[in-house]
Image 1 (cartoon, helix red, strand yellow):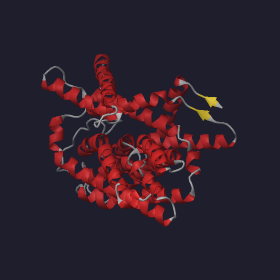
Image 2 (cartoon, rainbow, N blue to C red):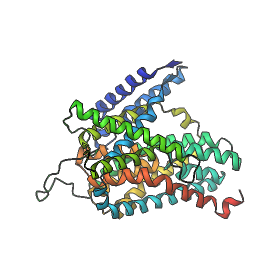
Image 3 (tube, rainbow, N blue to C red):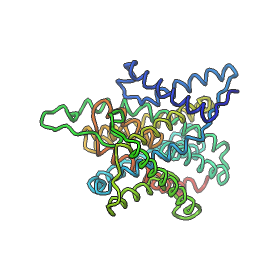
Length: 402
């Protein structure tokens, strides 16, 4: 057993990012299909750790930094949210949310249908639907406990975590290829002389150089720290109430309020350069730690029927993004980037969606509307509508008899 402490894990995560960048730069396949750098490096390390485990060598990381990094990323998303800009994207947010709800319904119907055909408990199909794919590890663990205690489903929690892990991996792998396929059908901004070039904002192109001063860096760091503190306090107050929300939603909400309140009062204007840099650092390190910590043997432990269900769910996600998300969002370049993002949090999580879109926009050009819509829907709405959809399915007579 090799256990890396806080510092060792931070070094490992940094090396994973450097490895991922090197792989994407040198391997044409990864570059062509817009595979995010943290995904490329993280999966290589996860495979190496799987090989070491077969030799009775196991490596464990200190993941205590993972949650703060995720929350810091969502804090920067909130601090980047200008309500004046959000008003402009109101209709687009609504249309995208409808597409997201449609996928949730399809995922659960597909999971239940396949589970029934394969002779499994239909609850397993629901667990391998939107609960773990759109919901991720947190939602999966919560509902896994409910299914075990209330419905007597054996090993529900283990199945939920393995399914969420599968979704996280596939969500980071299929977004780029889907976007590449769709971009072939559209005109990429910047290719037309009639379209003036636009400087990228926020998280659109993370590798663009941005000037930073020590004082402005500290100011932005203070805003993120306030968002984390107030967001966690708010999350604690809402625990056990009808308004209970995940911690990252509370942190993002505080970031939105903080940015727009300071601006409305004329006290301070958030520097988006620093916010985007700190947000991208948090995002990259979070994904690196999450992916290099993957226990791929949990996926190997999945029974073949469950693996079949999850593989079909990944295919359904790709087809839904191509034939539904892309079309309802306008069948243009922004729609292609949105489709890549939808693959990210439709199977994994919002950070995976952002990484997918960054991999696309870094190569083809910025998409302001995509980076406005996906974080808001992925953070604010997905968990709420997912719970509603899940409860509606459980209310069906079909499950009442289970």
